[in-house]
Image (cartoon, rainbow, N blue to C red):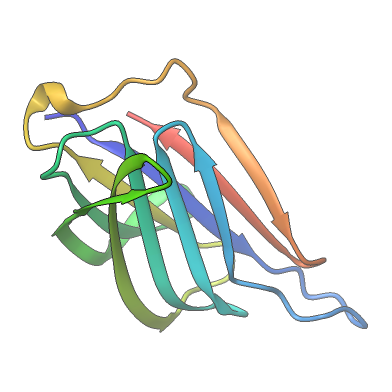
Amino acid sequence: MKIMCFAVSVMALGCLGQAPAHASGTADDGPVGIGVIGEGLKVREVRATLTGWEAGAQARVSLWQGGSYARMVRGWKYTDSKEAGGHRFEYTAWKINKNFPHRSRLCLEFKGPRPDAVRHDQALRTANRCWGSLGRVRARFWT
C-alpha cells in the first residue's frame, strides 16, 4: 500500500524587535490540504483534507526533526466524507495542544482503503507559504 505524505514545518527566527513567530497556517498542493493552528511553537490543532479519493481513507501525523523521523504524534484515523460548494473531499482533525521544537516538521500521511486508491499527481513539488514576519510554513509531498 502506498502512502502519500504531506509535511509542514514551522520555523521561528529569534530576532530582537520583531513580532513572535506564528504557528498557524495552511497549505494546499494537489489533492492534499493541511491546516496547522497554534501560537509560537505550540500547535493546538492539525486539520487535513483530501480530494479525489473514495471514502475510507486514513491519515496520521508524525514529527520529523533534521530530516529524520522522530515519533508519531497521532496515529491512523479514518477521514469523514464532506461536501461543500459542490466539491466532495475527505476531512479529519486532531487536537494536539503540544509544543514542538524549533525547526521541527509535522508530516501528514494518507492511505486509501485499497492500494490502487492512491492518487498520483505529476507535481511532487514544494509549495511555500509565509505567515507573518517570523513564521514560515513549508509544505512538501512525497510518495
